Image 1 (spheres, rainbow, N blue to C red):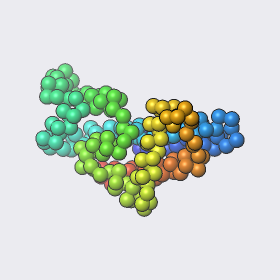
Image 2 (cartoon, helix red, strand yellow):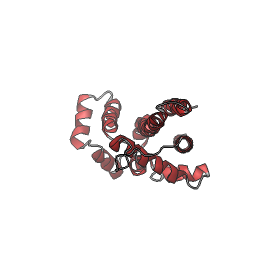
Image 3 (tube, rainbow, N blue to C red):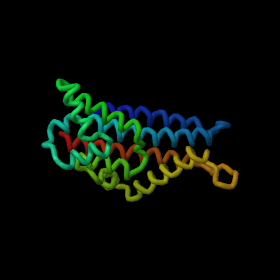
Image 4 (cartoon, helix red, strand yellow):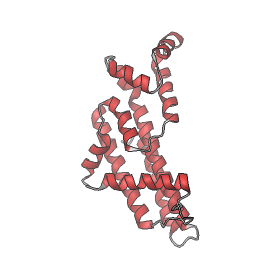
Length: 199
């Protein structure tokens, strides 16, 4: 059964597929393809953050506190004072408050690179979740293809997809379709890894 994060990702992928399909023969077809790339990468960002958050409270309750927890909370900007404040202010529901602090951090942090996602999932003992998901897919160039998509998204968002010589870069429906299929495969395999971890 898909999680809420996975269902939202799948729903966005349908929207991306629709943009790609409708780009054919459309006067603004290239910009529809660019929009599909940006939306697809945003879906990865959303999935990685939301899926992490879905397991957070269960994982906190399961774990014996360790230095790894202190390091993680420090990294997300929740120091000892904040944790003590949570225990004092919300003693009946401290986990709910800690989840809110995590959500605040995730809303400020983009998960649009492999290293950012793997750094986050390291807390769950999954520091190589991207590599493992790519290996699991059976496609040797999956990580490279998605890396190309991430780079193209940055060019679209930060440079409006200009090539530096006042010309728009060529964008191909075939490439965008391929990138989206690759991204779906990555997330499907990430989901399996996460489900296996928390079963």
